[in-house]
Image (cartoon, rainbow over all chains, first blue to last red; front, side, top):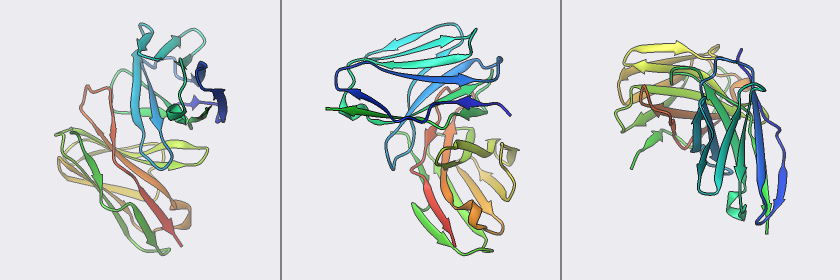
Length: 111
Length: 112
């Protein structure tokens, strides 16, 4: 059973701070890594993905991979109250037919 | 605008009933998925399908079956509902080389 672990939180940060979310995975064969945001009562929506070959920055969001330690992180700069949500980490092997999700980290950004 | 729809947002069924959850996508995606989401357990894959009439078991297929007769429609069937199947059920779709799964709004099923 492939495992994806996340701290459930809640992680509380003040508005404007950097929020750092982490995820560890058990399968060294994982090739693709995804971060989904899920607002309360809503479905997950993809915010970032990275492949095993590098990090990625998109606006206020940066996804980083540490393959040696088998963890992936999501940094949110200049956090806003609208970033308050649960963030789900997911991993995938070399195809896109099966995704393995963590249980999510709840982020609270306080005004 | 991409869209995945699910037949019901809320459903209440009795123990032993046969339950059908329907999912329809309008993106011509080959892959479709059924997950359940429970507090503290995240999303767990029940079944997925990569083509019409094709299906593969996910991590927790026991007590469930699926049907995919048309490309756009993927049904989840609870043959005899039990209380431990009370959960949020999420359907998703993606293209074969697609990095993004598009999720439906979810069906919150309560089995009493």
